[in-house]
Image (cartoon, rainbow, N blue to C red; front, side, top):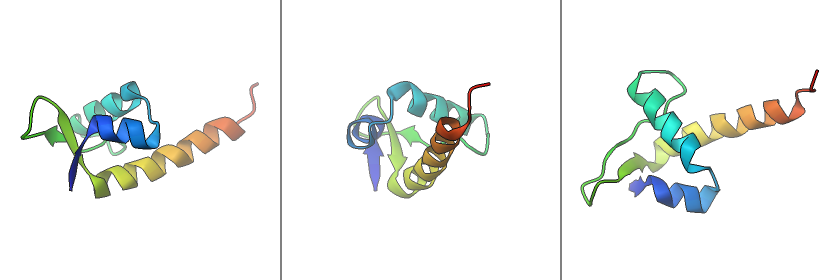
Length: 72
């Protein structure tokens, strides 16, 4: 199921700039990027729920690492 990026921002609380950067990295072919495509209903980007779920798990894991890492 395709959903607009804005829906993920509202539901999961991920900032827009984080998702936009992930989509940009997906187009550049980086492994941590998020696959997206232009939505048929307008000028928005749409993401498959399964793609977002796998990306979000990696995002959460990396957030946890950054929080645990001591400031030196």
